[in-house]
Length: 317
Ligand code: GFB
Image (tube, rainbow, N blue to C red; front, side, top):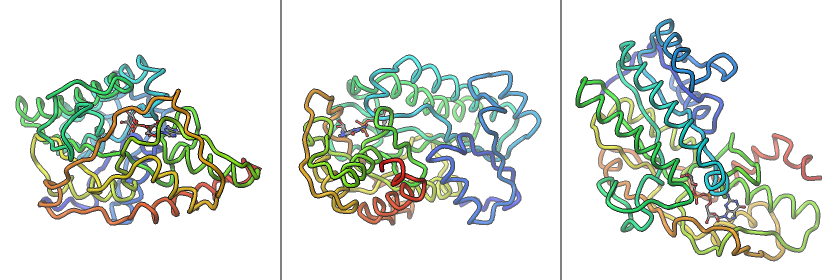
């Protein structure tokens, strides 16, 4: 266990995103006083020279790589070039600059979609690169695999203390509620809410409803990231999940219950299902002493509350 000095210079890349903003909240409540962030208008993470200048000037001790181009199944499927380009650029620029400017440690965030589409379930860390990827998000997955391999390689060749964590599907306050580009959980909250306030008889759900997904609240993920920054030092990319999954049909039923929409569900099977299941084996992280605390229903309730506070109700009325 490494006790990180509360005055250490901690840089959170992607601090306005779902994950980065939760890491900043967690750092603040843990008493860290020197958290460094930069808005995109001031630092373009795809610009290598700019990232290098930033690291040279700020010299962060600890780096959380929560910056990424992310999106749901439709965004991944329709913008493959942007997903592979932006994610590779961000990873190369940040990991290399952190190493060259003497950071103590770096934590890289990947995704459970790095594993083979038909991996045995639950998915253990060692199943990486044992089979074909899910086609709807292959470019994103390839970029995330490159990021974890960079961490592994910089550790092996240069002794740089870079670790990777692979979270399952994340949701929570700060999520993207756009119906085209967002992930399933915020999209369903918005659809159920809008159907309720407009008095609609039905709401649309993409795909068959049969795929299974595991959902981790972003505050649990942020907690796991701080835990790993202090306790984990190995080249193996560590799974972070809740140890449980649900079908999309079960998910939408819970969402409708929380939101209070009682109409019909209409499954649009012209939309892709994506990978049938990605249930992570979280045994390694549990052995280190970390477990998720926020149950799915409570997490959905919390996220719906946040959505309403942001004006979701007004937007839908
Ligand atoms: O969250 P999601 O977009 O991404 O979709 P993936 C999960 C499942 O929910 C799919 C279904 O089977 C969708 O067809 N679904 C049902 C919906 N209704 C909706 C809806 O209204 N919106 C959306 N978005 N889905 C992404 C990857 O995969 O997961 C990324 O593309 C990343 O690379 C991310 O790994 C975590 O779980 O299929």
